[in-house]
Image (tube, rainbow, N blue to C red; front, side, top):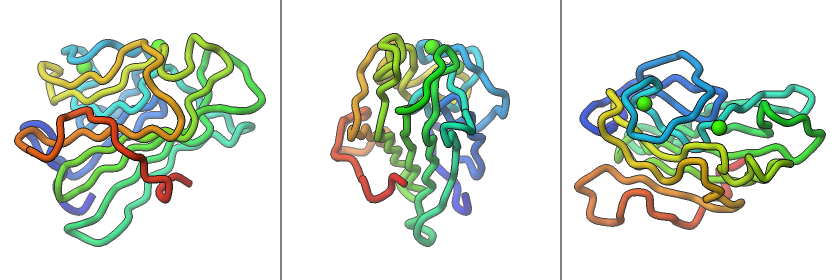
Length: 181
Ligand SMILES: [Ca+2]
Ligand SMILES: [Ca+2]
């Protein structure tokens, strides 16, 4: 990112992307066993649209991509997990796709979902995943859901920095289909 991204009490200029459905500003290690948040163990400084034990299967077109849209100070970082499957099942189609959008100027975070239907109901909709955000030491956070099938296709969730009066954190909002590709 070219401008510092405000997140809890810090600002960050780079972010690590993990194939297991989360971003972290302070660790590049991959953690596959999702926990409730906040929780002091790593990963912290985390943005988790779908933290679960996910796998990028090349035969399914599994990928994680990042793109930057717009110019500073109104640019957005878009991180997309496309066609990812759960480690615990072998499938030939219908893996999950979702993304996170970071608005660099405002600190707004949008998580949105194109497909969260796995073959197994044990994984579908986040039934085995953590969704939310967590601060740098895991002492503070906002958990949208933990091991609950709370997500569905064409859904978006926005997290706004505290002090923003426009909306509550973790509010469900209309999604932005133009960004999902
Ligand atoms: Ca943590
Ligand atoms: Ca899990």
